[in-house]
Structure formats: C-alpha cells, structure tokens
Image 1 (cartoon, rainbow, N blue to C red):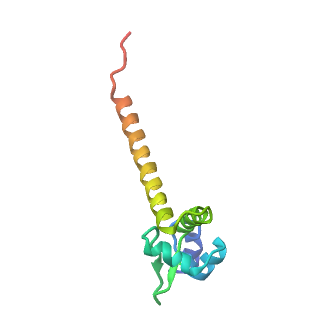
Image 2 (spheres, rainbow, N blue to C red):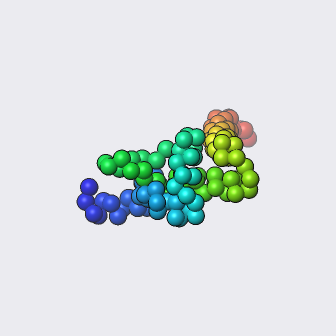
Image 3 (spheres, helix red, strand yellow):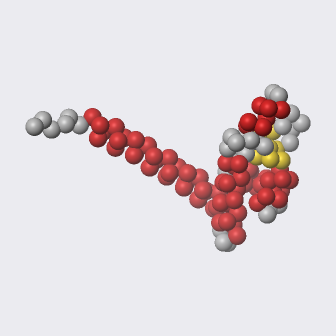
Length: 112
C-alpha cells in the first residue's frame, strides 16, 4: 500500500486508523474502557501487524455512545447490550422499509 492509498482510506469509516491510546484520548476515556467494551463484544478492533488494537471512526462512534450511557449511570454490560439492540432495531426497520417499498412497486397500477 502506498502513501497515496493510505491517505485515500482516511475517509473510509471502517478504516482502522486510530491506535488505542489515540482513540481513548479522542473519546475522553481510558484504554481499559475500550478493552471492556471489546470484551463485551460491542466492538472488535482490528489488529496491526504487531498485534496492537486499531479502531475505525465507526467503532469510535459506537464507543462514544457506550461512554454516554455509562456516564449516565448505566452499567457497561447493559450499555453494550442496549447499543447492540438499538443496532438490531435499526437494521430491522431498514429491512422492513425495503420490503414495503418492494411491495408497493409490485402492486398493479389502476387502469383508467
């Protein structure tokens, strides 16, 4: 991968551009918090060739939501479960909308 390829990937929400330390700094949290939400399978950071955790912008948004819930007093296990359920609900709503759109386009049009 060339330097130009790397710079192009920085706009990719799924590109693991952030080290654990940088991610924790950006979120205003600790590295142990990031490890904890990983242990609860909320996010799974990618690993560098040296085995270091790397986080994407998408994962940082999820971690920020978890931190918000924990800061409001929600236990970390519950916060992770809430976010997983929110994500599943959003996906189900998206699929339902696709089915509704497909069913609407399959209806025969009225002939005048």
